[in-house]
Image (tube, rainbow, N blue to C red; front, side, top):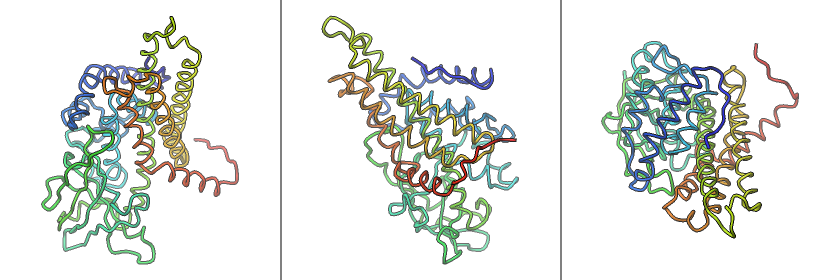
Amino acid sequence: MPASRVLPTEEAADLLKLVRDLATKELLPRAAQDEATETFPRDVFTLLGRSGLLGLPYSEEYGGGGQPYEVYLQVLEEIASVWSSVGVGVSVHALSCFGLVEHGTDEQKRAWLPDMLGGELLGAYCLSEAHAGSDPAAMKTTARRDGDSYVLNGAKAWTTHGGNADFYKVMARTPGDSGDRSRSISCFLIPADTAGFTADPPEKKMGLTGSSTTTMRLDDVRIPAERLLGNEGDGLKIALAGLDSGRLGIAAVATGLAQGALDQAVAYAKTRETFGKKIIDHQGLAFVLADMEAAIQSARAMVLHAARLKDRGLPFSREASIAKMVATDNAMKVTTDAVQVLGGYGYTRDFPVERYMREAKVMQIFEGTNQIQRMVISRALAKDNNGTIKESN
């Protein structure tokens, strides 16, 4: 049963109907096969881009959809309810555009944003390294100024869309404040076809097998200095600001994944009979389904609360961490319960719930592990002693 939604405008309601229809007709019929064969669905992202769905939260001035996050995240949820790899991919693409949107010059925006937001170009985001995941300030990839260019060397791990993206937002270390690691990281926008910029074979993963995840290697990658976003030393600030929005994207994807699992479980429970009645009529199992529904509704409410704060220009970092933590932990529980509802069939690949369960696990890990989210939340609590009420003007 599709989620019931309260949307801010009639235009938003029409958009969600369009997305739901597209997801049902175009994504659902091929999701299981592409995941089983570990096929990256590049044509799907082209379709979504040409449908205006890859740049939804950004300004129409440069080709975006001009939608508030409250709407954009519900679009992500609808996509992820049938195909999480694609939902994650849309979120990652939006994150890869963030540095240019927020810190690019007018000239940079005019040159690159229309194709990025219009979906002709698919983006990727390079922050993590093999030894620097939760601690990005420990990165070792370097960018050295050489005349009118920068030369980059190093390796960036866990890159979603690696080897398939058309452009990459890359964080690298530039000469800076030797006493503060965070002030010597800069942000660059690098085209995929740049010489010396290569992708390792994709990781063999537990889930999200339709999404390529690779290590990107930079071997004397030379790019024009105009490819620097913001100033030297702004990179970590850009990265962390983008992660707040990225965490909301993953929270929405996790909520959609959980909704898809619940829909499968309810449909099965309404047809499977034991002891002379449908299993949904057995109180023990019905209560499991009720808990699943409550978990999803709670996650959705937190995601939308954080989104509305962002849309009003209010601080939302703590709420983004709460939304990411709650939604992904709940998705892990809901998908596990969905497998239990289907019993032995849930453990087979004849039904999608086993795939949903495998896909849910990584959502507790990327965009900051849920242990990192708890650290962010607890630090915010330690700083905020006033109990203030947030208001918009």
